[in-house]
Length: 142
Image (cartoon, rainbow, N blue to C red; front, side, top):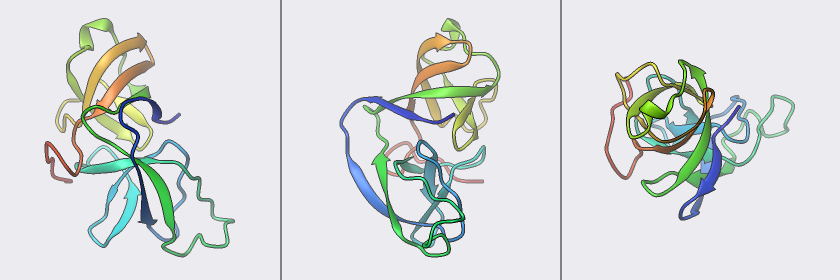
């Protein structure tokens, strides 16, 4: 399960990863306040992008803050995402929802509204825009 790039302006950034943290390709991330990225969760706000490199505990640089590639999120960048909580329906198109975690949506929650649901694909998948990101629509991490 992950955020999968579908369309829009593709911009790649390299960010220092949080040390001793596993990342998967497709994980949504945000800045942790110390210049490093960490995994998004149900309380995260200003997102930076989606990871393009897996980081495992067996990697030689796992405990380091090595820079990894990240697709920058933005208002015109569309991702396919998995629904982890709730059921995606066509009626939800054009509405906002929350995250369940770094790689799934919670379409039944609307307290953070960090994801714009662009298109219904199935009860477990949607095309979406990460609407709360560091360059627009600022949403505080709580």
